[in-house]
Image 1 (tube, rainbow, N blue to C red):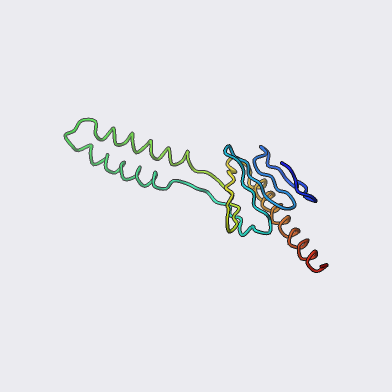
Image 2: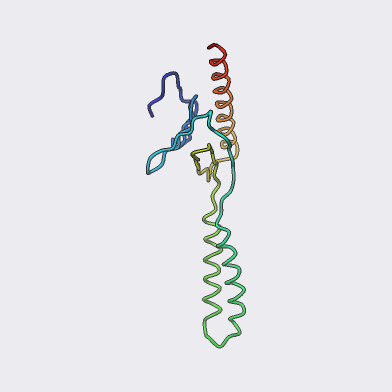
Length: 145
């Protein structure tokens, strides 16, 4: 990453896909990268994303398969239970813990699955501290003019 004049790196994630500097946040991905300048950062949100529809459909199919055990079609109930189990397992496998960094024009979704709560909190705190320092520097510069 080429730093701007006067910019320095404050923090890099353990796999170096997220970089926090004194001026911006950069998220690298396979297709490129996204930058958000700290003065444009509106919100930081830590959440767990999941495909709830998988769980709902799995439960409906499971109940339907229990009803199908009484039908004359052989194997309908077993097939339904297998499908319901697959949907529910897929729901639990696709849940992800993410941190959203949002600006008016761009957003960065950073997957934090497997990282500890302390690590994620430290990164969010570092971003907020860098943003506050950036605002202070901009205000001081504007007053000097």
